[in-house]
Amino acid sequence: MTTTPSGQRAAAGSLLGLALGDALGFPTEFNDVPAILAKCGPWREMELPGRAYVSDDTQMTLALGRGLRTAMGRGPLAPERLERPLREEFVAWYESPENNRAPGRTCLTACALLKEEGRDWQDASQVGSKGCGANMRVAPLGLAPALSAEQRSGAAQLQSALTHGHPTALAASDLTAHAVWLLAQGMDPAGLVGRLRSYALDHRTHYDHTWLGDLWRRSQDPSPEHFIARGWDECLAVLDRLQDALRTPSPETDPCLATGEGWIAEEALATGLLCFLLFPGDPVLALRRAACTSGDSDSIACLTGAFAGAWLGADAWPADWVDRIEHRDELLELGALWDA
Image 1 (cartoon, rainbow, N blue to C red):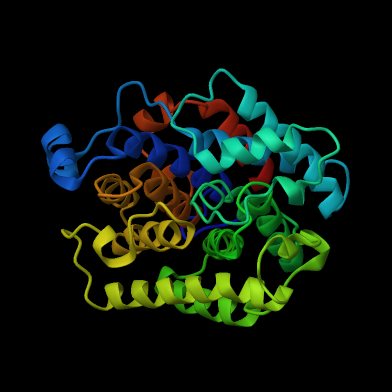
Image 2: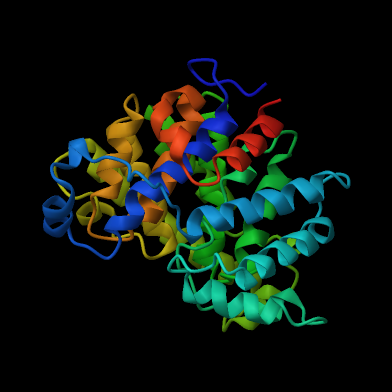
């Protein structure tokens, strides 16, 4: 059983938090803070919509979760065992009539290519895109039990690379999964940013050929090490900005002003973390702060919820919110599988 400070269910808590943040931030995406305040009232009192619909963020998290469950049901997690079910789930999402929740262009483009039988996934990957669409869905890889550090890292980067092949998208997905895993293991949030910086420095020039194959050759980089280091360096830079913001925390200031608007991978990670770390003991307030931001508010709040839920567990979320979140049963089913 994965434990958190309160001994609750980390996987269920993280998945529920992710979806709740998504649903809270979905109506405020593309609005600036004054417009959000005019529409929703004071940010500290923001309420979940009565019909708590989620965006493509939660839809793709569930697609990843289902693919991961299928792969792990067939044996130890390995690239060839994960790639096929993930590809099938992503294409199914692409073709679904429910795929009408402001999906990202990169995911749509890549999935259309992944649909083509016989095409190597590396040729579908959008190596120029570091949009946040890969790391906002990666939480399941920080929650699934019995994965080695190499499996978790490699799979986090592979799931990103199926759509977002930019090295920063790979590194940010890896860091996001690692952060979720650390929090689910009971790591004190106060030390989290330092641990993530150390992790990034340790991995800075490690290109995982086993999981990524020759993806790097689709770029203009002279070597795989040069390719992957570009991603880790951008993540390290935004972690520095995050550390600066936490030295003089300002909860009433739009977090996007400190760590970016979250449309790109490294900024979504940092701003989601900032909202969580401003209120580590008050997950609902953290979600409200994340949803009242001038950037990609649903993805920022989605990540904030994943971090907060991994740390505090399933009971951290208001029961009346959980009861009306879309896909509640499937979220709880996957959570129970990984918490068992």
